[in-house]
Image 1 (cartoon, rainbow, N blue to C red):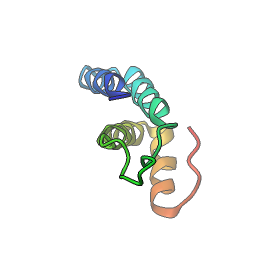
Image 2: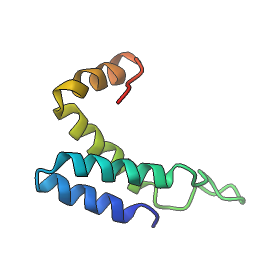
Image 3: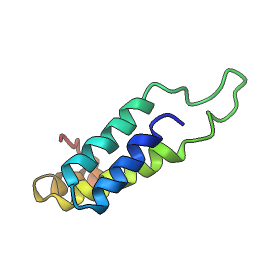
Amino acid sequence: MLGLDYLVMGAAYGCLGRSAEAVKNFRLCLSSRAELPKSTSQGDEGIGDHHIAAFATYELAVLLCMQPEVGTQFIFAIFFGFTCVS
């Protein structure tokens, strides 16, 4: 399960209040999974562990929304479709 280690580390750092390390690990999780195929050669729905990226995305969003300098941009990006640069 590619990226699971980064997801767990990000969650642990988040619980410890170490946001910078948590954000770094969630981003590493997502980047490690970026090149995975979305479906198999037989047309099946992926590799069966899409939840890893989904959880990492959610946790990253929560942490980014708590950062005043990023949170507003992130919320606008979600609700109004603007590009979020962070």
